[in-house]
Image 1 (cartoon, rainbow, N blue to C red):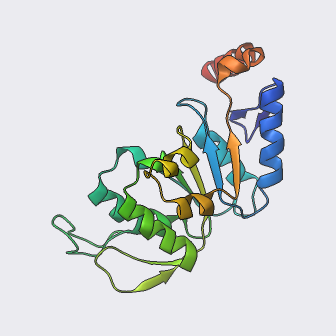
Image 2 (cartoon, rainbow, N blue to C red):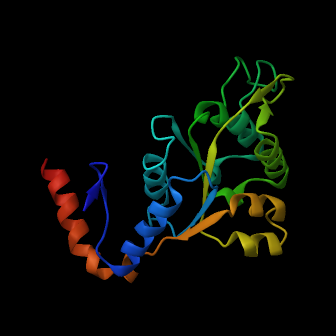
Length: 199
């Protein structure tokens, strides 16, 4: 079946199980970790969870943590004030501000620096943040969904990821099966994309 007019739900047992888990967790306010290889549709699943939640009429904001430098990730997450660093020519809203009331999706979250992880933990605990270079605290209400193609439990055991942040995110976790493990769905997807292309 097709949900939200664009996303396809497969018929394979693992796909059905995945959507059962989504239906259970979507109406809650739990933070969620999505595990899956590249291409398993982590952002699609995050959007689906958002679309089935009470926050569906509020923003869904996605951020790819894999492409950002340490310097930029703070500004992207929390925004900055004019003059906070070289090149900060105007005030800028961060992803937390943009997602306020809705859902913030952090893809490849394991790539964030330890320093930014500490700032993130503070925001989650205190539900308020400051822009980089600013001194005004702003309240924030977001649901956080994170995605990783590596096991975050392993990452914190190796000292790469904060254990306390892992526990904050890990209120619910979902494993996304790759298509090769649900081969029954390949023809379904092929027909679905063909119909979209024809349209």
